Length: 337
Ligand SMILES: Nc1ncnc2c1ncn2[C@@H]1O[C@H](COP(=O)(O)OP(=O)(O)O)[C@@H](O)[C@H]1O
Ligand code: SF4
Ligand SMILES: [Mg+2]
Image (cartoon, rainbow, N blue to C red):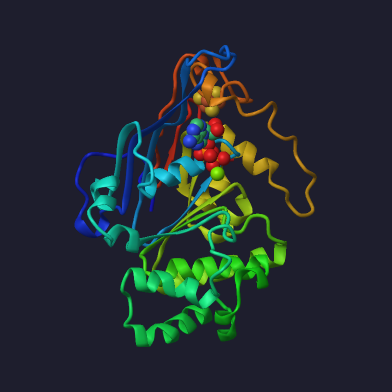
């Protein structure tokens, strides 16, 4: 479950979150737009700006937002691949980077399914060797049991045993994603993180993979963090949702509650723009997402918000509690209909 605001009070051990992000910032120094050819002038791009998030054990969390909202940057912080430039990013109450640096436990426990599944697999290796690689790296089973474990993992992700002898080039896009999931499961992780793991596939393959991920999450008690720009995917797969806009989480809570009655005008706009059967398409959100190099004054959504009022251009709303399970970063949250 996602906590709404991050209090400093200690929760009981069983309730201790796996991940906690407290006012996390990630500022990239990028070349100043319009600088002369010989200038080295840079400017800070705020890819993450005051991100608050708690991920509890066993939950399934969708992180949703338009392209450029900071989803992949957030993921890199969660995986300990990048050090945030501000705030605290914790894994079991310790800095994520400390956990990552202290040995293989973090890498074993937190597994990743990459967006470009095919690109993450060495085309010269058989599927069997690719799945055996993490088994060996993490010393999961004795060598003599490796083939049997590979077969088990193939079966778990719905691939035939003879797939072990094939090469990635001989597999379809959906099968390649299954191999990537099998590789991620090989280290027996408790957290599975996936970045757009089903995007770019046809609808029926997407549905099969979503059903697979759902059954893995339930049967193995995995904590699932799923990055997607697709609300349909989020609502099918994830109990909890975090909606991002321009580097900040602007609404969190149970997926059904948030999508059923959004509180943030941005969540409402995303919800309204999602195609629905038998209903006419609603107006898309006006304008484009502003550049993070040029964040609007006050609320970052104020340039596109149909509910904006005068104070919205003066105050920058932080994510704050809205009832026991939800949180929103808006000065004038929508009332449930
Ligand atoms: N390494 C980087 N250097 C400079 N800018 C970056 C870098 N990574 C991401 N960004 C910028 O940060 C913002 C968020 O990017 P990203 O996290 O990839 O968004 P999303 O995954 O939601 O599409 C974008 O404006 C992107 O251009
Ligand atoms: S704070 Fe104002 S501009 Fe921002 S989302 Fe809420 S109503 Fe819209
Ligand atoms: Mg991305």
